[in-house]
Image (cartoon, rainbow, N blue to C red; front, side, top):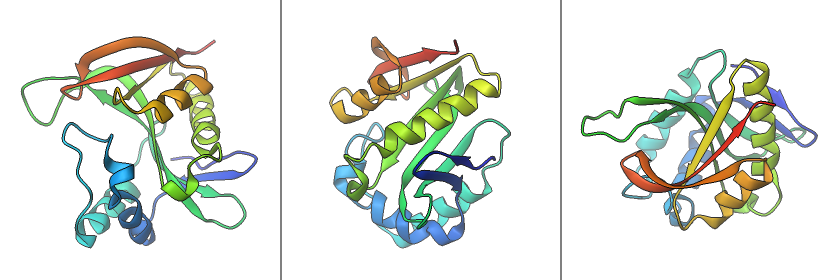
Length: 177
């Protein structure tokens, strides 16, 4: 997975050393409230260790799970993902829909600084250079902050759908120009 750089940010591969940050971020209701069909906070440090190990092991030439960090200090801000978007369905785990999803989860201390938009623009550029033609994003219907990020990075709102994650969500997409 390629490291991506912007003016302020370094999007890098996760390491197991990121477990404390992952626990701090995902143990907060204000972060988790819009994630998943049944949102819940991360309750145990072992969950953070497992997630950090899983994120660190993720390997793909185009898709990624990047740690969003400040370029000079290394301060962690959140997660940027580019991965197959799961289709709704009866069997778990959910099957891929054929769409590719971009998403972002940021620590509350990083909200309001433009980091999600800046990081997402870098990942979209990477995706299009690597040959992807269309990228989607889905948000909880009440997550107006993420919907604003999607629009700021050039995505178009396609409406409400239940086609993904067995949940009703707002769908956004952007195509390579």
